[in-house]
Image (cartoon, rainbow, N blue to C red):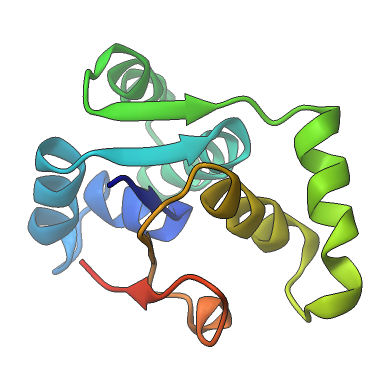
Amino acid sequence: MNKLIDSDVIVFAFSNNPKKEVCRELIENEKITVNTLILLESFSKVATITKDKELAIGMVKLFYQADNIEIVNFDINLFFEALKRSGKSNLKISDLVHYTTALLKGCSAIVSYDHDFDDLGIKRIEP
């Protein structure tokens, strides 16, 4: 089963830090799901942290070309599905969109260092 990968894991994979290798390995070797909002968040953070816009563009291209990565489009339907769950959750709206993506795609886990994803209907794991 696919795992939803949160933007923090992607940012760690594409910037210099102690978590880089474990995050990169996960992205390269697991069947993963992201949505376009996750890619937008990741692009913005990687470009800011590394001050290398070309690296961030290359990262997004890598996601679009990889056979092991499913990209879900953030559209009005996904937004409204997330909004339906907003009364039952304290997640900020972007995290609620990610959680809803994981639910709709039947992901086995959300891979993230963000503890806001704890105690939901899908388990949170770290790389």
